[in-house]
Structure formats: structure tokens, C-alpha cells
Image 1 (cartoon, helix red, strand yellow):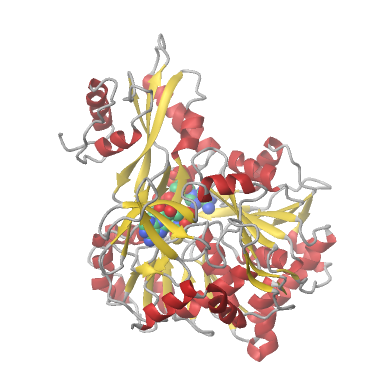
Image 2: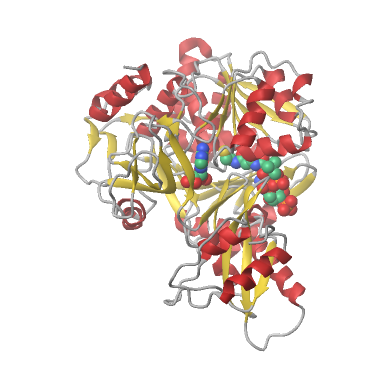
Length: 633
Ligand code: COA
Ligand code: AMP
């Protein structure tokens, strides 16, 4: 039997024994009473009764073990032309001081704290400082607009919000403080305190009484020690798009999370302490939480915080420069970032400029790696390129080539096999397992392994309804795909209204809700159409109220502005077509799937229940006018 099969089978037949062994990699304040508490299934709890501190595991224990002088964090910022390195000792000191400052503002164990920051070291310090106090952080990605931030403030009810004066998007300075002020104004819940890190590029005006200057607080702070918390206590909440305008607050616990991430570094990524690991993501996304901050530090590696893009900062050689300059062994990024490089440097001329001898593996996730991008990267880099599939909900990969266990042959288009702990199945609409090679919806047999979401923040019922009730005994992933004869998993895309734009997960349902509020719009649909750079882009199809006349281009521009204003620039909502009617079934269901196929020039067969087949022709014409549906059907 292969090593992978042996490890995988054990994880499924004896999950408690398997994860109890993995838990030895973590330093516990108190050992657990029960490895897996299933008494409240489908809400499972890992390491019940155990106590630990995640920040202690990420920092203090390495300092105590004599590795305090090892570099913990490299901040590489082409947009400010700065590079700064922090040893474990230095970052521990910064975190302890900032935790002391937060404690001074009244933040303590169990309180919530929102972090709305660009990719600067203080974002990592803020996350770890919350973890040190046992407070629950919720990082909100900087590309979200005040309205989105306000929704998260109202749900998480933070005592404190931590932010910075600005972000730098390539060359553009984006002031965060006005966005934060607007969000607090929009929210019903008002945080007691805000802490603002003043960047050199711009200083924010502070609101007397509510806002505090980061540097000033630190100068008076008394360092805080790590506060032990229960393994089952929440470490963070991370909001992610669902099918409606109300995002889901994915909860991550402390114990299972630390165990799973520590295990993953060695077994999935073949990474040991001292290795330099770079996840080129953002701390606002799950990849950033898990593989910029927690996993590399818990495993005692050097992590890289990169404030830049794959192109334009300054050129398509940016990633290769960072890899060679910092001796990076593993890069983890999204296929879209590679497609952006490929577009500007198709022959890999920039790759040849750098010494990539320390570089061993390229991991990709966030969206399916299309075979074109896979072969481009593999052939030019001459390194293993590994696609792995995961979700905000799971927090770490569900399927991967677990190279730390055994490197399996790669099949382009597949994210290889289930990671130990994940019993992945493909089901038909009745919940029956399908034959190899046949497409269906992907579900994971319960229990999920440690580190995955135990529930949604203050929403157990929504958690059960969204994930656990669809097929009893399974977690419903909302992804479709198939498993081939060799057990390789192929993820083909979401089966719900969630789309993936440049590796960012967005809800078309939410965009529809916003577009529908325009006074001249009668009804609308937003679909995700294929895009050669960003994977997908949202496209709005809009029916105007009867009698509306006036400038159609003006209305379209207003709709674009509304979505950008409410969700943020990250929504990339730029295409709108105005039509006389939307294609529907006789029962009134809008045929979004069919419209998506038309936009992508895929073959489609109108459902027999279609109300008015002529509506499809009209959609095709309208989509063609805005650059989609290019092939004549
Ligand atoms: N704060 C404010 N605005 C932001 C932002 C932030 N943190 N991040 C992005 N934006 C803005 C951008 O400036 C852009 O605005 P624009 O419409 O005015 O130009 C918009 O949001 C879209 O940004 P993005 O999708 O990043 O597009 P881009 O054209 O600037 O860059 C890529 C294209 C492919 C280079 C980039 O999307 C990328 O690297 N994606 C990888 C994503 C990733 O790593 N995801 C994590 C999953 S592992
Ligand atoms: P997020 O929660 O933002 O990480 O997005 C999760 C979604 O991204 C998944 O449900 C998939 O649809 C998609 N996704 C992530 N990684 C992959 C991958 N390697 N292959 C295919 N789809 C992926």
C-alpha cells in the first residue's frame, strides 16, 4: 500500500487516534479530555477540555526553544520600497506590547475585535495580539467598501477596531480612515475604541475619545502574557460570501486549528521550521490567515508578507525577485496571479533573470488551475506545480498532492487526492454516491477534521441549514466535480450563486440585491462569465421599469457605481446589459445557468420548462454587444 493510502486510511478509520498524535506537535496548557466530542453533532468539537494559546504556539514557544533570533517575518513592500525583517524575539515583543495596549483599552478574552488593514506587519501583530489575549479577531479585507465593513461590524459587534491610515494599491494611495468612519456611521453597533496605525504616506485625523494612535499606545503599554483559552474557544471569525447579501461568519477554534495547520505544514507542504514559506495572498482572506500568519509561525518557519501584486510592482518578475531575494522554498498563490504574469511575460524572460535555486514548490489555490496555466508554470519554472482545493470554511486544503507524505503524479486539471481527514465523496441529487468519472456535487463525510468550521458566528441554525442539512451525515461543499478511476478529484466549479473573481469569492445574489434597488430597475440577474485573466467576472442583465426612458449608458454607469460603492472595487462589477425580459421557467425561475453558458459561448439546451425561448436569443444579442457570447450559436 502506498504511504499516502496508509496515512489516509488511518485518518478515516481512527480519526481520534490520528489527530491525537498530530496534537503532540502543539504545546498545550492543559491536555484535552476528549479528542472528538460528537455529543452535539453535526456541531463537532475537537480537543474538548484542552487549553492552549495560539499566539504562544506561534511565537513564544519558539523563543523559549532558543530560536528567538531566527527570522519570523519578512515584510517586502515594493509599493513603499521597503523590506523589513523581524526575528521571533522581535515580533513576540511587538505582539506582547500591542496586546498590552489592547488590554488597556478593555479588550479581553472572548471579546471581538475587527481588523481592517493593508498588508503591513502591524496587521499580523494585531491578529496575534488578539490571539494572545484570547480575544476573537475578524479581519476584513481592505478592498471591501464601508457598507460591507458595516455589515461585519453589526454581526461581530467588536469592542475595538484596528485599522491603518492608508493602503497603497500599486501607485494609488487609498485612505482607510474615511472608509472606517463611514462604516461606523452606517453600522448600528458602535465600537468603544479604534486604534489607527499612522503610515508615513498619510496621517489620518483621529476622533477625540474614540480613536487612539497605535504608536502612542505602544509607548505606554505593559507587555501582556498569553492567556490560555479552551481548545474549543473561537480564535477568529472570517466572513465569506454566501448566496445572499448577508455574509457567513465562519468560526475557527483555537485547538483544532493549531493542530491541523501544524500537521499540514509538514505533511502537505513538506515544510520544516527554518524554511521560508510565502503565501502571496492577503491577510483578509483565509489563505492569508492560515498560511501567511498562523501555520508558518506555528511550524517555526519564516513567513513573507508581501505588499504588492504579481505584475506592476514593478514588473512581471516581482514574484521571482522576492523568491530569489529571500531564499523562498515554497510559494503559494492563486492561478489568476500567474495568468497576469503569463500575459505580460509569456516566454518567462523575467524568470530567467533570477536565481531560483532555493525554490522547490509552487502551490496554487483559490480557483481551479486551468491546464494552460499549469503547463506554462511547470515548463518555465521546472518545479512541481501543485493545485490544491479548499474553502474559507475548511481553513486548510481538502484535496492536495500531500508531498510531505508522498509526491503523487500530477494530473493537470485535478487537485489530486483527498487530504487525510477529509472523506470526500461525489453525490447525485438524491445523495447517492456516483460512479468514478461521473460528475455530481462534492460532499465530505462527517466528521470534518480539526481546523474546519465548527459553526457560523452566532448562527448554529444557518450553519446546519447551509452545510449539514442538504445530505445528512455530510458537509455540503457547494462545489461540483468528479473523482476519476484513480481517486483523483476534479473540482469543476460552484453549484450555487457564488463566483470566483481573481481568486476572490463573491456573491452574485448580493450584487443582484444591490442592482435591484436602483429606482429604474424592474428586475435583474447577475451571472459569472468566464474571463481569461480573472477566471470569472460578474455581468449584470437588467430589465428596466416600463416607461423608463433616458440615457441607458447613464443607468448602467450608476449600477456599476452602486455595486462598487456598496461591495467595493474588488467586486469588479463593470459589465451591464439592458434587456426587455429575462429568460425564465414557467414557474418563474430565472435561467441564470443557461445565461452563463450563453455568455461563455458554451453549448446549451434550453430547459423544456422555459417560458419564452425567444428571450434567450435576445440575451445572446445583448451579451454579444458587451463583449460576451462571442461565438455564434
Ligand atoms: N484595498 C483597496 N482596493 C483594493 C484592494 C485593497 N486591499 N485590493 C484590490 N483593490 C482594488 C484594485 O485596486 C482594483 O481597483 P480598480 O477596479 O479601481 O482597478 C480592484 O480592487 C480589483 O482588484 P484586483 O482583483 O486585485 O485586480 P487587479 O487588476 O488590480 O490585479 C491580479 C489583478 C490578478 C494581479 C490580482 O487580482 C491578483 O493578484 N489576484 C490574486 C488574488 C489572491 O491572491 N487571492 C487569494 C486567494 S489564494
Ligand atoms: P474561498 O472560500 O474564498 O477560499 O473560496 C472557495 C471556493 O474557491 C471553493 O468553493 C471553490 O469553488 C474555489 N476553489 C478554491 N480552490 C480551488 C481549486 N484548487 N480548484 C477549484 N476550485 C477552487
